[in-house]
Length: 471
Image (cartoon, rainbow, N blue to C red; front, top):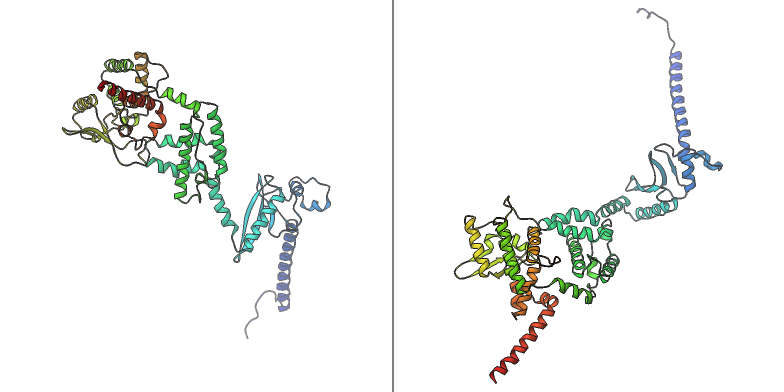
């Protein structure tokens, strides 16, 4: 027979009893943990109607209401939550050491989700409960309020400022040479609209803006001329049209806006003063001062540029951007053919402007001095790049002083002078329009009407004189 095992003999009943006691103890211990957990969690699980006062108490622990005392410091630590007894899913929680947030819990398609409604005390319990009811209705209709919130967040982030600094900036930089200038017009002209979501800019906003601008215009406030206001208006309108084409907004509020109109009685006088022309004596003094400046500064680019502005009435931007490919100088024709800077986004067809003899001779000499280039800028800077915005500012100031001109005269006076003398010489208006790069005579009629009347009176008198001479 086999030997019995050495050591103490343990009866099966003892083993069963020990295992039972161990299992029972484990179960009791587990149940004790569960009981403790339930007791500890009981404070957050008890539902009560949320109020602003209750939340303040749950933060501070100061109240005389007995039914609130169980929520003492319930929101003191992160994770603390109190659920509303009236609206299932509505609750308030300490989400960070500095924030207490209202939330709404819901189930959609078998998944549990929650959405933040706002922070206390930025919104009250009453406001948060209304928001929660809106979300509850969305869930009842099968919609996900989280998706709606994400869309709303994107729309809120897509303000006029952000669209201007990103999407529209990229668009303008690819199309306009002076993109920074156009962007600044919007940024400086509409400061009160910059933080608004682009889709929330309405006709009412624009009407208020127009009324404010018009009032300042009527008061003759500096910086609020009709042309300046129209430029601001057009700049924002172009941005809105771009946003509409790209699906960022559904409608363009400018489509419903009335056409800009201004009281031009007082402005006409001041604008006519700016659109002055030089007398023949002043023109001679100007040309002499140009030669003197050129002699003093050693043959810089200033003289040829000044001569183009004077003899052809071109804008400074078109002279700065002039390329050798724009100059057509053959035995049969002599002109400048280029797309003008001001309207280059709309008009892609080059304007052909006749080149008078002094300009032709000057450009021929300059071309010879620079090795007869066939392309490239006619007037580059020292690095071979385009000149700055106002390359002739100091030169013009020197010429004004040397020639004895009024200090208020602007460089643009040379263009006004060119147009004015063509009108007074009875050159047909359509011809003038083509010479200065305009597609119609509207601008000439609007801004130089006082000269046109004088020219027509003079022409009528010459017709009478001709009849007298034949009598």
